[in-house]
Length: 350
Image 1 (cartoon, rainbow, N blue to C red):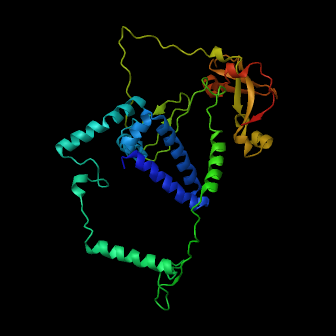
Image 2 (image 1 turned 90 degrees about the vertical axis):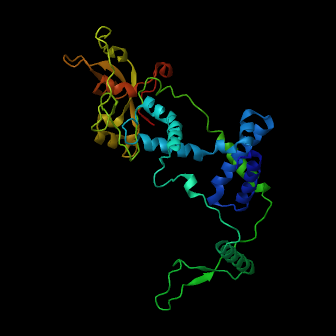
Image 3 (image 1 turned 180 degrees about the horizontal axis):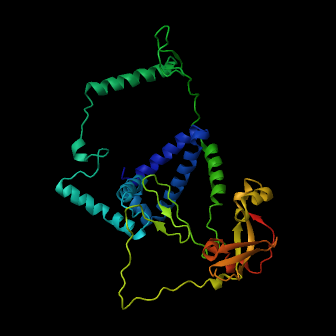
């Protein structure tokens, strides 16, 4: 498996097989193999370092190694409460290999019940044993029956015996029609479709949401549920775990600097329509579109004594106002570089 040249030739043979079985179930494999062969052929023609690495150690490009590595990392940080700490997770990732080496030196099995140590499960199967001979005889008999058109397969009952006769019902197998080995036309068809689809995968600028927006982190893991503070956006550690606090010297301690919210006054924001009321947004844009509709508004000072952290959002088309916190409008800000002279005064559905 480490010979990249043999692996590339095997990919070509596998592609030829998928092109012969042309249906919807294999269309994704056709595109993936064509793209992989094109990339490796390009590296091979240029004889670059990527091809040299692939030719000598193809397993280095196997995604299963990364999947296993990240699975070990996820298992290690799932119960420790550090999943949202980038530095702590990075440190745990770097310690995976040293931990495995230490465990091997002292003879400790850290793989659990699912993955035992490989030295404890080495087995050799002899080609002359009765199990191998019976398996070969079974498939040889099946191949002869398939060639002769006499092969019987189970029905939709999946081999369940009939209640009256006690016999497992079978039916004549549907034979695969003769395949055409000439796949040049199908190859050109899939290649043209692949080239057209790849032209849409280009990196585009998103000045309307970056760099002024604040990303919101989400966690879909069942192992650890990470909750976030609604006001600050910071992750809340699991119960029973006290977050580490930075140590400050009394002499070098600096006073906390509060953010100046006056810089947001006059800026244009894209406010979700449902912020003005779910019923109003549903009646105006419809139930489905109300969740993605936005209204453009300008940030105005609230001018209310006792509420320095609040502002008013004046819509540019309806003249309606909405009171909100300055922290709340940060993800809605539109970049100054992208907006220019604002002319669009109609609601936009994104």
